[in-house]
Image (spheres, rainbow, N blue to C red):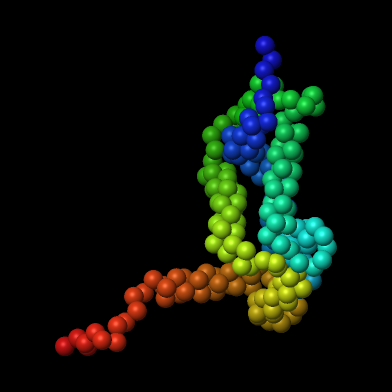
Length: 208
């Protein structure tokens, strides 16, 4: 009997096949990684920083509310689920049979990728971790950071570009971006250490 999978099971495929999907798409991602190594202009740098905000600005008023950001996130997740469903629905009949469900895993095994390798495991964790961190940020900041004014976000992105562009040639190299990330991590570590360090009590006598 040809059993089909319902909507909940289809969504679960995102988790079940995360390793296989990453392994199968590793080759197409290489050009993207190569592109990241190329110098980035100020216009491209700023555009990348605000493109998510522009996409979320449903009423095109130049600001993004918390509701718009949540709606954009839900739409993006729905788009990914639909794309995965379409990829697995080989005969395009609107349902996923057991054979179609098993096909990606079998294909990976035939290619010698039956087990998720370190790269696939890391990539899967990164995708889920990114979504989790985004949800945490929304929870921590609540409504306080909204609405986000896109013009102000562009100004902050421009200032970031200027700070990272060490040789002031109007482009950011991979080395400059890497140095900026390292400096940012060091700054965050220092802030965490300062928050975690106990404050000195003025009434505590000095050591003998």
